[in-house]
Length: 231
Ligand code: APR
Image 1 (cartoon, rainbow, N blue to C red):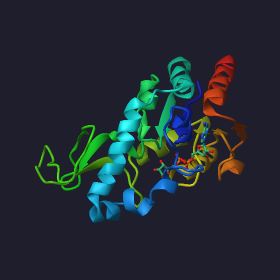
Image 2: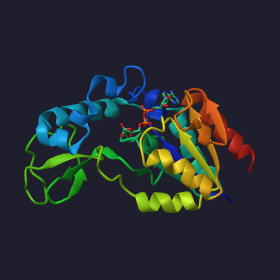
Image 3: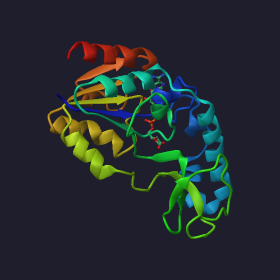
């Protein structure tokens, strides 16, 4: 049965109360990307960066998965073929909604990383400057989030999944950040049908076979029901 690959962005978590980046008043209207989401920013002011991620970690811990996260988990459970979920989000709401094996290409708020030895561990609720790495003891702990200028995680696996996709869906992403913004082209070249589910047409909307507009908690459950009805 056909393989479905789903890419999600901040828009799918918006109705769970987590801010998006580029909407009115979004995170990038409140903070400068170069200060809080680049390795240079972290080197310049690690306390500011830890503060930014501590606040997002605290907010994410209070957020609940919404009907869109739950509908995708239901599709992954009930669809007779493979359903692969790739997310740009660093929250754990897909897992909270019941999804499995979620591919976090931009890392996770739940993770910590040693900038010296590359050791990964579960982040405490609050991270502070100079925290020692549990493996090498160097004072170089950072959030395990992929910053601008860094290589996203799991790219080989993601391209393999896209090459085998029969249906590709992008949900809640503005299509402005690469390499995720090009996934629709990879999927289309592999012969997949492509659909975008978004509150407003993304930058890449014209690259999709179908665009379904509306809030994810309305459009995604309806889309999943339609897919399940077509089996
Ligand atoms: N339902 C569906 N879509 C929504 C909703 C909603 N309730 N609210 C907002 N959206 C859509 C917006 O229309 C927008 O297209 O979600 C998208 C959010 O876009 P961005 O804020 O740019 O978030 P995203 O695309 O995930 O950003 C990609 O950029 O800053 C980096 O690493 C960061 O992972 C992030 C990446």
